[in-house]
Image (tube, rainbow, N blue to C red; front, side, top):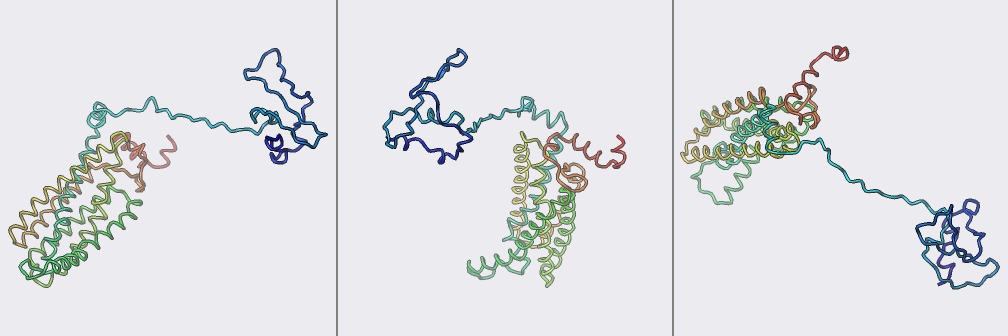
Length: 347
């Protein structure tokens, strides 16, 4: 192998003659001397210099390439892997600490409120939405004894459900995405329960008295409004509020408990629907809708007095690190926000 083929030239390395001096005054094959009487740990290597008055190439026995580079090589960046160490003061999840967080610190009310809100909401929501194929046809004057093919039944049910349920649900979800970033989630949920209570009273009353008349169009419109406010309010906020007020180490556990409570409400709702549909009296559906008003008012009261507020007084979301400190810390933040600005500055 030729020396000039092995070693890059100064121009290839981008070095200037004035900045680096690659010519060694030491004689050929000189061995690096000891410095200050101390020997280097690494083995000495021979410094090779080529005669400048010869144009011929010489075959040389070469050592490692790094030994023949200039004394001041290109600086190399050393990347050090820094292992992240956990905070030694961080609280570890345990049954004892979970018990302390819920009962000793008084945060069990947050879990109770989020779970009951979800149960009351899902009882009414799944009673109406899961069984739309049984409840909605009566609003459009369709009778079960009519002679129709299965295809005709599916097409008519699809059209009726889209008008009475799907349109309101999609619009409600879109509005909720916009609203919940500017308004308090707890207030949105509370007013959602109240509006639903009012709508269910009207829809249930009309269902009982006018289901067999031409006023069923009004029932369909009001029923669609129910789906709209379901998704603007409680059907969206119950998911969000249940995930915010708990510390990270217990957030999934508490959210799972609240969600399981909601599914329990949906199971109980199916028992009621089975009773109503088996009897065959369409007016019973109206009475069931009216009875749901009690659940909606209970949800509104529970939201107002027990459900945790996860936003500040301006409707903006609080930091999860502040919410994780529990109910007592939230109340301190709320009291500080309600104080006049001048009084806070004086303190």
